[in-house]
Length: 241
Image 1 (tube, one colour):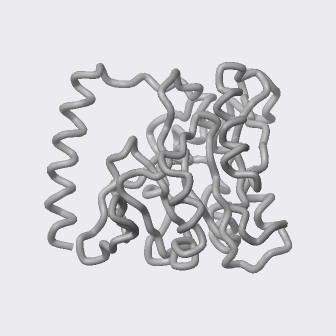
Image 2 (image 1 turned 90 degrees about the horizontal axis):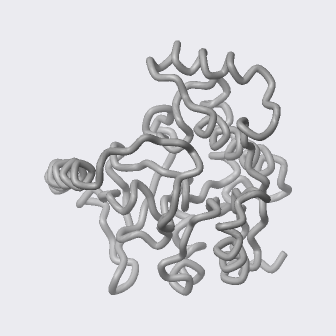
């Protein structure tokens, strides 16, 4: 494979016809990307699925729904592939979802190797744009983007992140027993064992459309107020760190 191509994966599904155009666009923008068929427990047989639901509730107090279990299994599928790839442990792979959108493809491609060489787990976007960086680690990437270490409680979502082979092995171990949604990394990783980075504002965003996971979200007004309060709190936490 051309060393200048970003290696990675898009989690997609053959029945997601409304996302096909976006997936094709991502393939054009990132020729080194591979398609990975998503696991949908509602559409295919997943062994012991009800046991998995029950175990997740026992361990966390909240049962994962079928969509969340499917996303977890789909990401684990990719992590398994990465661990079997014949590349150095520090080689990074980009992981996207079928509704991911590249806000600035040129910056992503130009800076991918620079940033992933510094971090084990890197978020190109997350938590719908609400990731915040610790002030002491904040560095200029371009005139429009900054990068550094994110406040651990603001990292969430899996629509645009990269991991190296070492981290893929670690994440497989951490999710060996089902518990939390895969995108709630802060709940099952030890930030002292991984070097975590992020870029703000988002270089990769989640496209507008219906969720395939099955979350019951807040009303738009309540969600806006909730995010505003969290952003203010997190801003001051990051300011002094």
